Image 1 (cartoon, one colour):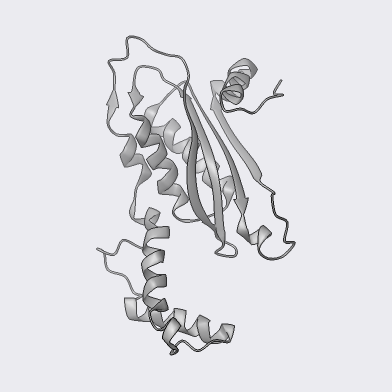
Image 2 (cartoon, one colour):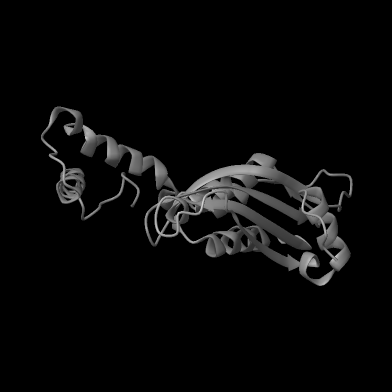
Length: 199
């Protein structure tokens, strides 16, 4: 889904008609009272769920702060809740991201780390790609000594269809720079976010 302020070859009316088609295909009547406004509601929800296509997450990292008195230890933002959607089944992915970096001479406002997560999450995704996108965006634009991203999420494409396994979550990680090269740095990050047993 593109930014609504830019030209798009799919109109609002076409998108709503596609929803009506799916409703008919599912076996219901899109003209019945309870479903009359559903196409409009669904397209509005899509604008929200996939608003990440209108964002450039790197923009959130442009404003940094250098007055940190030489601070060069780990910065970790834990438990960033997010919602995304699986690109294979268009089903929700609900989870938490943990992001850490080792600043060199500048830091970024912590809300911007959460915005980077949101910018990529609000697109059709696979969790592995989402994890890598967040890490590489921070590495490229902040140039820290290292970046670590861990995502723990449940996938509705697995819990509500197919194998129907509830209570299962998937954990992915991307370690760059010092977090990849130094086992002690990596272990400290994992301890900060509550994942133990790392060697």
